[in-house]
Image (tube, rainbow, N blue to C red; front, side, top):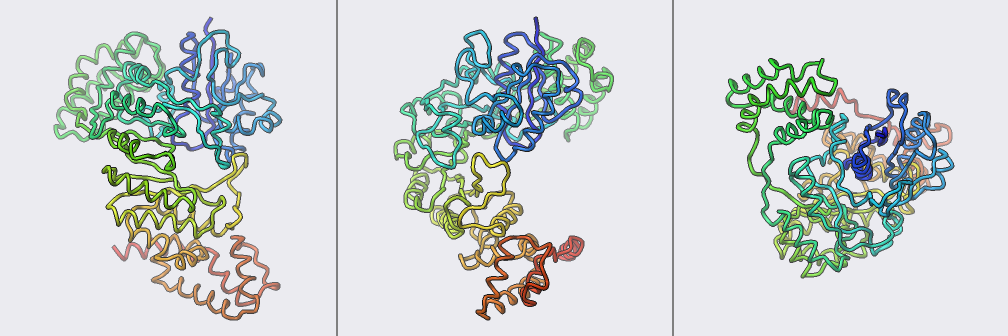
Length: 557
């Protein structure tokens, strides 16, 4: 008897789809069950009766949203034993989540037979993820044209800031990938990129075997990708099984997308649109899935597919492989760098979490340049045991290496938050709220990345650490609207007040710093604070009006 299965991901913004739920979906579809996937809370789904509900969890700072989602679906008519919660937060905060929800979480991976109380020998973690569930929701994951998988599991390091030892305690040094890729190609069409989520691939004793398999899969240096005819692939799927909801959704999406393209031959595009209209393929009355849509599609397909095939984008594009979690510079030898240079890796990610590693880090970047790997990226942890100077120096090292070696290293500063903290408010020993907010303000402007150009870096972070220190204290508006604030002399006026107070040497500047470091400027006590400090702090109260800034920007065009 078919079971009704509900898969839920809380409605936070995330880049990568929930692999765990995708594999659980694959398992239940193997059993012939009906699977529904949803992101967020739905009263309609809450009102239905489910045989099993699975909720995925991500990082601990999504605690409130995660608990809200779990408790929302607990109101469904379902036994607790058939309600499952798994993932990062569920593993690292097992006891607290159990206490808060009454649901006993699933720890770690589903890598053993009979996980989740099932009675068979199927290992869920080894199944090909079900990409179909991503077609049944409105949310679009940015990595939707990538194979997402692992070729190793775990990590030989046990860094204090990392959740991997809890999630993947045993290191597995090789997981075969090619059968899974073949399965994905047959069912969903060939994908462009390969995104490997391995936490420490260089620790594998079978690293050469991993690279050989990646080459065999078509990700050699200079590899190209030509998009398959997805309309044909999903039409064939729907023809075999008319109730394939994901295939129907995908076909409608492809038709809608293609009908909105800017073809040079508008007559052809008009012909394509007329067939869609004639057969009513995108009409509102086709929202219900089933035979009616397939009947209309059968009639329209011979007319639509030749046009789609002839005019769809078939231009070859570069295809890349990305070890997304980064590689360990300490394990990166010349031989391993040579192997990495054989595949179309972009970017090569090397973590630079500690300034003490600067010599080995620079050595490995130079080694990458030696093997003509020009596109690099690194994660730069801050707010941990580092100081603001450590962060600036690491970012500056990348800029200098770019200049020296003609590289493009994109840095991504990552704020440390303990793996069991329920929000993002943690402040490291050498940091304060204002410093952290300054970094965030800069990164908001740069969309999270530190670009490789020196002029860009100097504008964003300063030409020297002294300039960076000044930025750390600068009012947020003057950081975000930097050029405007400077031209209107707001920045100079603020800095002059800072210098004036600092020159008094009577403790007044310490009083000012205490308030600035707190980054709370709403309720400044006028009686208890020096007048000069109060005048300084006025600069921190949203001094730039957006309308004035927009008018100024218009005038400069």
